[in-house]
Image: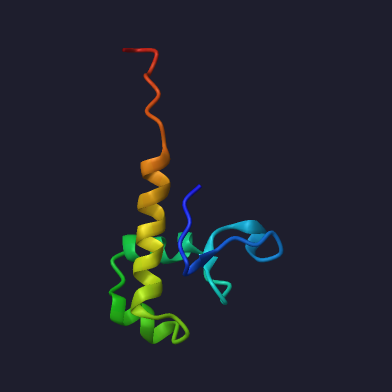
Length: 77
């Protein structure tokens, strides 16, 4: 399982979804903002408890989760 010092998973916070440590801001939410083309400056302005490092920790966490996935051949292959 992917780990990062700025990301935590607590079953009592956001049902255990990975979140920025010390916040209730999920990795998924930050990725959604970035996918919607929010800039880092916009995110930091709207969520002042976040830092540049927190945003990029979310991206790194997502990268690590994807890297852990195994490719499963489809039935069509």
